[in-house]
Length: 99
Image (cartoon, rainbow, N blue to C red; front, side):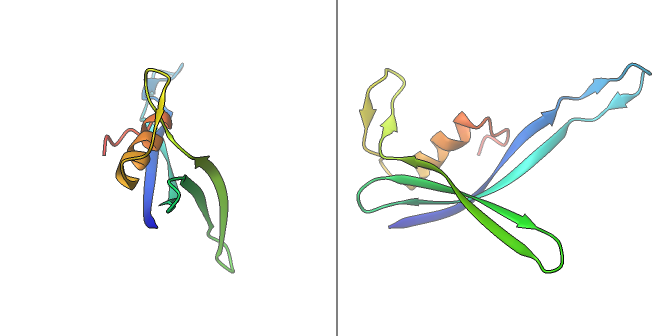
């Protein structure tokens, strides 16, 4: 079973000028994930949330269990590898890094 940790950066608010004429910079949200491609070919993604308090807490929530690669033409195929599945997840979640 292959595993990979990765992050997604999404735009929270676009850069703009507010009603007082003040320029406001773009803000982003970074989310951390753990992923795996199981021996049976299912792509699982878990959201990893770190709560920085005392004591430090880490919560995990399964957010995707995708048994096939949904192709653009509406058909499906097996995942080629974990990198392909992670790239698909980043695209559908509007990751702005392009990685």
